[in-house]
View (tube, one colour):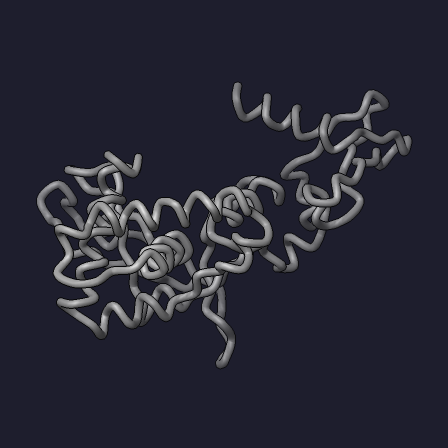
Length: 240
């Protein structure tokens, strides 16, 4: 409560911090996971400073609970490792349960065109209301994977346009540079286009349009619309 964290996250942080003493090898694995700290510090300074403050408050709050010294830098690293690598499982008691898989799933990279997908293994049970397996992922290939090719999954929903995927991924500390994200039309999929008064479609002229705030150009008459106007229309569409 003092940190303003949801209860599942607070429990996760406390239990995982205790691994430093109860299971040093597991703790070392978690600390070795990608944390993208430089991205947060450079691209999201306000969020970065908020996490540093939370890390300090966490260590102060947990002084009487943890069996030894736990410094703010470790708490910050744990926050980042969780944010960048954790999976969420739905369970009856809590809405979400956090889980890390340092040896396996955490090694799978993100792609907006993944070659694998994952589900909670409990979702594959014949009678999920009666069977409650341990926190386990079931990973399946959805396209051929060549020898030596990276195994990838989607960290975010794929049925949303590039700028919304990038916004979600920024919460994990990076921007995606897959081929889909680098094509401003997303392979002419029409996943997000703006209707022009002439009957044509206004589309972004370049990748990273959400960063450069490039104007969207009609493919029929050449009329343009500012990124601010496009974003407002998109926000209104999703709020409806």
